[in-house]
Length: 207
Image (cartoon, rainbow, N blue to C red; front, side):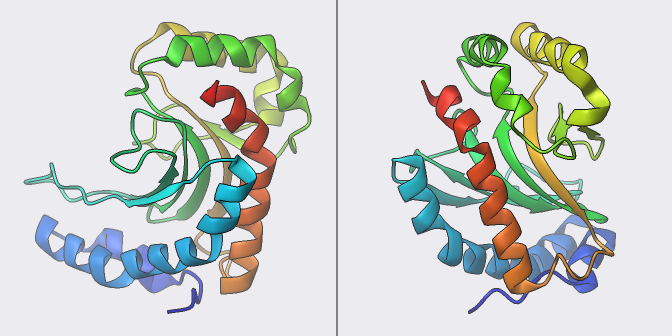
């Protein structure tokens, strides 16, 4: 199927009560769209990254009681998993879509990546100031590069380096009511452009 965009129906998935019902809706409404996005983006992104990337769609398999408050897909350079590797993410909460370069707490070399970022802060100055950062992939809260400022960025990277549970995700978010940006072709172009802008950071994280 071609990717047609995200709609309010997709975001309403996260208002369905109960694990079973919400997971069924995630599988029926959202996961086919993730596959369609991958069909459009994965090959080109692999070429740009200089390595084969693989699609991973979150299955939320460990959940037995609480329904997921978000869901996502990941592109990673490892076929078997993504959590222990720098990876790209696209996913949804009930009120926004996120497009991330994601470095989460399972990374075994988090301190080395953080230190490399701190040595190459100039890579962040080339990014649009409206790009956003999150420090916990389970929470909605995020802050723009502009709001954070250079000192805030340094402090965030130091916490990412020193505190095991702190994560570092950077990219864009799109509000659920921004219908124009969530349209199929428009969204794909924005996601592609965002990943291109984040590739220098991805390459640093892969060293």
